[in-house]
Length: 461
Image (cartoon, rainbow, N blue to C red; front, top):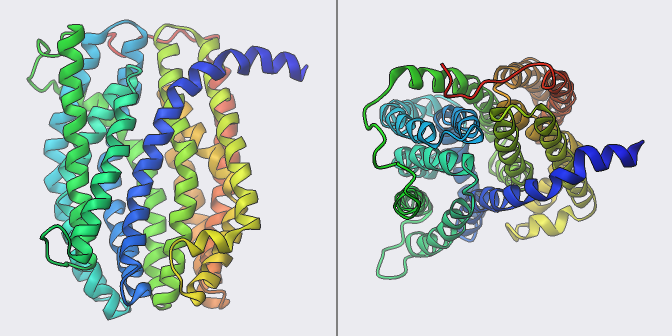
């Protein structure tokens, strides 16, 4: 029975899924590696714990806002993949153009919200030395908002049409841009004066502008070479399509906002414990986020494969695509759980030579090992559901598990029971386990409807 299940649901889909997923996984790893490079580069300064803590605080607070904008663009996964599956490339172009208009309108709003973090943080009991470096770093990151949004628009457009290699190349090469920029701006090379921690923020800003420019150039090049009709597409905003994009993207944006927001609150709370717990939290969060990038890339592939299958009214293919992606993501994260249990010291040692920080971060990685498998399950299930046009279920699951259960429990264990940062991570660990179980259940319910319900292409009336 299991052999038959594997051959029918998994084996036929593995090759096309991996063909699409591997470049996206590499792109997500490249995305995460930019943050890791920032942490490692500033961590080699004189006061390692303060610098790492400042980057941690600035980054998580920026993403707590910016992730909402990038999440809105996730609606393009559904629109573009459904249209491409139905053979309507012109409709893909229209979705991309209106995504650009949405980005232009959204960028100044998000930047204004990011500026409001400073007076809020000043009123909290956070180490002044950390804040002194976190504020300039946050301001530098804020200028990357529009390039970041445009990058996500071009990326979703390209990957929805199975054009994933340029996405991978832009992020991998952007890491080289970011590495050189950190070396120059943080420590003062190539004729640039040493800016310290804030230099890392400017380096990331330049790298994001580079990524958006690369994908835009590829969109133009691909259209010129293959005559897809992009240049003839209407350049005027189409408000019903923008509304459709918002309708799909808003729940996804809220879901990612809940997820990043809860870690922003956790980071701010742990910042009250001092520079060492905050630096340890950042190292463990970076490491867990790095492993998360693999199922996140598979999740993006799942959204595309499921959406394209439904665009051509093939419910069986959509079901196979979703389950294949879920098994791939869960398998990888199970291996990462073993690594976190067995060699946490060597992982943390790559970030800092400080023995106190190494010991503290190793404990957090041990806690993280317990939610790795469930993080993989929930991440890929979110993508599969998004490909099917369901973005609200994940939003509700993240809201309840993180904000109603996980964060209050973590705060209680951290401060009232005296567990410190491991207490906060224990609460978030429970939340991820609950989300993983719930989203697999809802994906199972959704995919059962594929054989009975005829799905119309996204461009249909």
